Length: 229
Image (cartoon, rainbow, N blue to C red; front, side):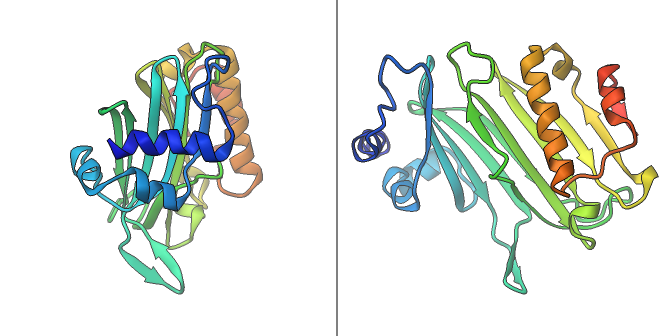
């Protein structure tokens, strides 16, 4: 199958031993040329890839070789800015799809207003072994924007950990009463280093101006609250 022949080609041209036994985990980002060479029309149909591929991570861990495919619809272009209404993430191991994520804009939400675009924030996405057990723990970050840009959009942090998707969901707002965070109960069962890693990521999003959190949200998370407003 061309998909896996291309994966071996990645190793050869990069000089990185993606599948070397002495390395427990490894991940690389495929170039657009390699994405085109790796995923045929038949592959796209088989894995029900619905939208144009934005990014592909090829990674290897104790489960074997994997591909994490991030896709975004292309719906409009406004002032040289491409708008996306739907996103999809598909994880493929060998020849089987192991998990999938789908989301879309809120077209008319009374609480958050109308959103204009949603996309993966690839600068903050990570494909790493976060707990040192020899398996990759994909951490996806994506968000939306509305009439006020990031200020009234949403942010979602989704961790795939041991086959379970665990999320922290945040609604931005310029009004204090409009901001809230929803934390999956499973988040508080994660190993402490992973919890701290995600909390640090949340702080980074705030420091860089992407997130406006409720007052004293960190204290609320320390108290293991599920809804913070």
